[in-house]
Structures are given as C-alpha cells and as structure tokens.
Image (cartoon, rainbow, N blue to C red; front, side, top):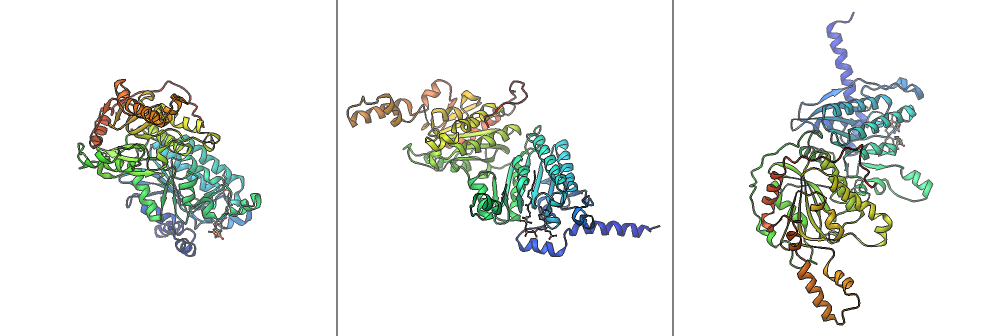
Amino acid sequence: MKSLEQKYAEFEKRSHHAEVGGGKERIEKQHAEGKKTARERLNDLLDPGSFVELDKLVVHRGTDFGMDKTKIAGDGVVTGYGKIEGRLVYVYAQDFTVFGGTLSRANADKIVKVMKLATKMGAPLIGLNDSGGARIQEGVQSLSGYADIFMLNVRASGVIPQISAIMGPCAGGAVYSPALTDFILMVRDTSYMFVTGPDVIRAVTHEEVTKEELGGAMTHNSKSGVAHLTADDDEQAIMMLRELIGFLPSNNLSEAPVVPTHDPISREDEHLQTLVPADPNKPYDMSEIIHSIVDDGNFFEVQPHYAKNIIIGYGRFNGRTTGIVANQPAHLAGVLDIDSSVKAARFVRFCDAFNIPIVTLVDVPGFMPGTTQEYGGIIKHGAKLLYAFAEATVPKITLITRKAYGGAYDVMASKHIGADVNLAYPMAEIAVMGAEGAINIIYRNKLKTEEDRLNAVEAYREAFANPYRAAELGYVDEIILPKQTRSKIIQALEMTKNKHVQNPMRKHGNIPL
Ligand code: HXC
C-alpha cells in the first residue's frame, strides 16, 4: 500500500505534468513566436489567485495512429473559471504546445463543460483560441465536439456575453465557434482565421495569397468585418478583454457594473459649440463629441477599422455602461451603406439583449447610392439596422447633431421607431433630402436661370434645413445647445432607467439576414 507521502507525491507529479503541457521545447517555440502559453495567458487575464482549473487531468481517448501511447494530462486545453475585477467569468485556453491545441473529443468535452456552467451560472465565457483545428487522428469524433460547441454557442447567445480571442491559428470549421460569439479579438501577426487556407485556395482558384493577407488580424478587422478588436500582442489582448468585460453585464438578467466617476454630470464643453461647422458640407469628427460627453473621456470603440462611416462602442454616463452608435461625417460623409448598417445592427442587438441603453448620434446624409450597393443588397442590409433599432426595448436616446435625411432619418433611432428621448442641435437638418437634390426634383426643368435655382435652394434650406419642423411635430423633444450634450444625455438616461416594455410574444422575429 502507498504511504500518504507517496499519494501526495503522485498527485503533485500528475499536476505538474499537466502544467508543463507539451514540454519545455514547445513552450520555447511558442515564446519564440511571440505567443504566451495558455496558462500564462489565463494568469494574466484573471485576478491573481482566482483561477480554478477544471479537468486538469483529462486525457484523450483516441487509439488510432498510436495515439493511445501519447497522452498528456489536460489534452491541449486549459479550462475553468476565475474572476475579472472580482466578477466571475468562465474561460478556456487552447494549449498549442499539446497536440497543437487541437480539438479531440475529450478536449471538446472540457470546453462543453465550462460552456454549460457559464450559461447555467450566468457568467461571461471567454475563449482563448490557439489551435490546429480538428484533431485529425480522431476523425468524426472531433467534428462532433465542434458541433457540440457550436450548439452551445447558439444556446448561450443573448444569455451570457461570449468573447473569443484569436491568439494563434484558427482554421476550417473551427472559425465558426468564434463567429457565433459576440466579440472576436485578434492579435496582430500571430493570429489568423480562414475557412480554407492559402494552399487550398491556390489549388482551387489559383489565387496566390499569404496567410496574413487572407485571414490576419487587419484583414478581419478592416476588410471582412469578421473581427471586432485588434491587439498588438498577447499582453494588450488580455488587457482589452478585461476592459471589455468591465463594460458588460454578466448575463441578460443583470445590469452592467456601475463605475463611480468624479466627472460632473452637468459638465459643459464650450468646444462643442463650434465643433459642428455652419456649412453642412464641411466634415467634423464625431468621435470628438463622443469623447467629450462620456465619463472621463473613456470610450471603448468596437470595430474601429471597419465601416468607419459609423462608430460603435461603449462609454459610461454617470457610471453606467451605454452603447453608442454614431454616424461619422468625417468618413464618407457618415453615409449609411451595407457594411455600416450591418456593423451597427449587430451592435444594437447585442446592447438590447444585454440591457445596455443605446445613445445614437445622428449626422447622416442618407443611404449610399450606386449599383455596388444595390446589387450587394443595401435594401436588406439597411433593413437590418432598421429592424434592430425598432425591436430594441432598452432605453434609446437619440441626438441629431446635423443631417438626418430621408430613410436614414427614420432608421437612426427616430422617435417613430421607438426612441424614448429625441434631441437635436440648433444646426440639425431634418428633411426628406438635402436642398440641392430636392430642388432638382421639385422644379425639374422649371427654373430658367441659375439665379432662380439658387433662390429656390435657399428657400428650401430656410424652410426645411432645420430641426424646427420636427420639433413642432413633437418628433424632436428638445433642441439643445451642443455644450449641454453630456448633461442632457445623462438626464435622459436617468429618466429612462426603469423603462420596461416588451415586444409581442413570438418564437422569434425574422430579421432580414
Ligand atoms: C492533429 C495536429 C493538427 C491537427 C497540428 N497538429 N494540427 N495534430 N490534428 N489538425 C500537431 C502537429 O502535428 C504538431 O505536432 C503540433 O500540432 C504543432 O503543429 P506544427 O505543424 O508543428 O506547428 P506550426 O508549424 O506552427 O503549424 C501550425 C498549423 C499546422 C498551421 C496549424 O499544424 C497545420 O496546418 N495544421 C493542420 C491544420 C488543419 O488543416 N486543421 C484541420 C482544419 S479543419 P508535433 O507532435 O509534431 O509537435 C477543421 C475542421 C473543424 O478544423 C470542423 C468543424 C466543423
């Protein structure tokens, strides 16, 4: 019979084996590539001493290709739970040093376990992905593991926040778990995501493309819109994950944490008085308004490199997390196009699912014209944003800073689709279209001279290019001075804090996908 010392020693030995994972050489290779190991990442992510590991000793059950002779405790993924700023989160981190972090059936079961716990306990799930994908030696068993994860991603969607950090390879069907989650963060130079890699592409379509061009961090953050955040390295990625979690509630039934601030709620900013130019054709940077009005100027922008004509992200007003959606007149005049509509629609739906109020800042000349947009389906994609704003039952506060023209006026959280408080600056222009376009249509071929035309344009501007028609009709509740923006938004958020409305009972709506 083994002595107590021997039993403790065996436990220490097994535990140690699990912790060294694939061994010194593979850990060094991981470091040489600029990547941390799974355990180092979790150590950085979670509050010191808070990590509780589950299934540390799980091994795979594969027998083909001599796999029964190579078992490593943990089997390529470290799972468990811990805290971020004292709040519970569930985590899994794929360990590339063990079988390339690949997904075996046993490895999938570990991930499935934390996903089920996260959903049941109502705490966010953070996945740190770094994996060669399906473990080839396990065949369809591995695929079944992925499918189980996908299924749980869908079941948890809208129940708990799900965040994926891509910190190494993520290829083939493996990309679909992150794609089902709420946020994807990618690390520059060391991460990539694609459904088929460069070799397959070369064989099938004869295209030459590098891994980085095909699926690197900037590709997905600026071109495809698949990813939401970019980090320069593992350390920054972890800091961003912690910051993001701080803005979010733990689940769909709870509120985001309130972060007390010394920033006065009635703080006025004189700079805003002159930020929006008198000339409606001159651009300005909407992010200056955002940074000026949120607590301590702290704005966490999501998808900053994609569809820059719309800005989305989180800020706090008097300590409370708020989602901000804002047209950006400094980019494509703030026009709504396919990409910006889809970007904002998904964001609005996330906010709505998780009880995060939405502040919408509007300066939009309309929808982008052109065959590229029409053939690409701007009708259905624009409808996504309309649908998302209309179905959202969280407090909705809208401020028109300048242009609100045409269908885009309706779409951008207008009173008519359920905004609770609608504000406008005195320089707001709310009408069916801008003066030049309107005159060309109303007076087609009827104005004889250029002078007549200019007079007609001026008369239209005088009559329509202002917020007063809308204010007279009650579509705008209040015209405010730009310097008062912060206090007016905080007042509106306070007033709507206990809003409780419900859409009619249904299985689910049918958003135009
Ligand atoms: C089993 C794998 C593996 C895999 C890597 N390894 N991928 N083992 N199944 N899919 C092992 C390697 O044999 C190696 O083991 C270790 O992991 C590290 O891999 P390396 O190749 O040495 O590392 P690196 O040079 O950095 O290259 C990483 C890589 C490459 C680019 C990910 O390994 C690769 O291309 N792997 C195959 C990727 C792939 O095609 N996966 C299937 C995708 S389809 P040793 O013991 O030598 O260290 C998929 C379907 C999902 O995932 C389905 C969902 C529906």
